Image (cartoon, rainbow, N blue to C red):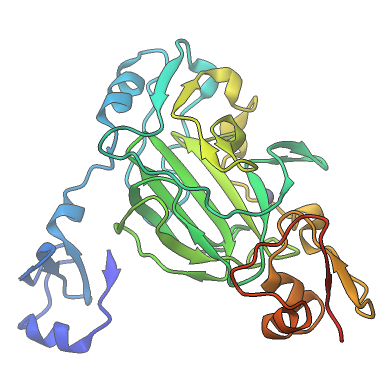
Length: 317
Ligand SMILES: [Zn+2]
């Protein structure tokens, strides 16, 4: 449910008195469909109110009806994990999941940058996702078509977090964001900007912590995303081997590292910089305390020029 931002809309609703919570005091016809308005100044669309959270009926049929699994998921916009009883150890058969289909054929790498930390056991903790180097303010995009389930500050580590549920049966997490560009129940397309990258939550440097989950259980994003060559596998075979043992027991934790070298330091007195994978001109400018305009001028470059790994550029006159 969204907070009612506009007082004028509230007045238009013809407020007549207090109702029981959950009982709309008025309805509005909008281009997006019927809108219910509540006495506590919140509102929601009819389609959202009746939404059961199932975007991929095919997968839902399999996991909900398999008596050894009985996986469940719910549509909750205020928590990360919607069901804590989905035990991957109970998975028997392999599920063939199509990450894209004819209706939802788009996909995108959430941010093209250097992978600085991978999925798995790391420094005594489980890392439920993958870390991608970025500079605060960089645009993060949705991996697949879907519906935003969660978009708010997560107090326990993720920082500003977006969770999108997709039509392919997966959910993706985008953590430590500086700014969120979407709201719960909003439909998004693959490649659509959803947040600006940052360093919020338990994070020691700006980066994107990206997770892929199947019914609340994290799987290695590199099972389907190739971050280096920027493509996504159209097929994912879901079986218990792609999850971490005991994965659901840790499903709520974020991570507490900035992703190793995502915030590599530079010699501020240096006059040149050797381009590394994941570098952007904007990022280099920030690290040396200069601007992209100055860098372009110093190096006789145009904004459209592409940085090459290993290329040496001047950072000071
Ligand atoms: Zn991480």
